Image (cartoon, rainbow, N blue to C red; front, side, top):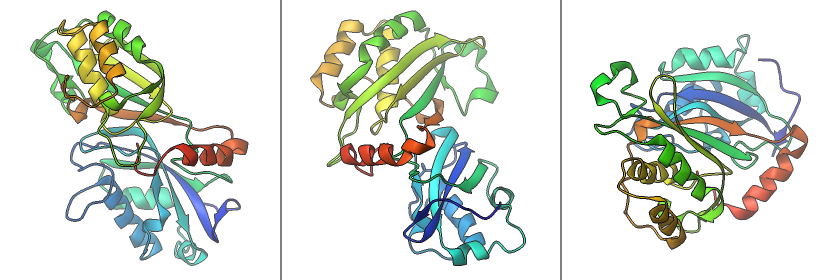
Length: 286
């Protein structure tokens, strides 16, 4: 890793960290006392390299994930002092060192100086998730068990996709979210698509500016009800318009869910986007 020439925040150098993880054996992203979490393992490895920290290296994640949820492309930032950077010594390959220290369930792809204005969470302009479902229980694939929800009944992905389009746009998704004090449930759902892929797996892909807690898994639960013939488009519309959390549909298991992309604007607009996001969201939102 070459010495950074960019972004200083309060005298510290900011780094962008791109990584992936299998969330099966983790109690979510956020560190929790006595529990195995992705952040906890990453912080432990970083502390070995850079020394003790009182503020978790200022680490901020682009999208929090719950227990059992996976990430193919996750992004975080950390802020390091000159003294911490000097601890790298003659082996500045942070990516290799972190990967060597951590479980193979977490892989660091990049650890590089961040562009000016970059904030992993607030500079993001969208998050993209994919949920996978198998409705062919007779051909259940053991290799997919960690990443696919297996159902014992058939679904109609065409009906699911048609109903899903009713959710597009800027809406109050309170009916599909676990509310948190001070957090908005208004989201801009930019894309949602349901299809059966070539491996006979039903994929539900969602892209939004951000997602509130449990939003994706709650929407998937509602679409499964539609696909199974237990609900229709009118039911889904009424649920959305209610804008109040009601356990009408089952929130699906986390294992089928993967964060697949975080989108950012051009470097010149990273700071502007971060300020806009801070103005309308709180830190605890996904």
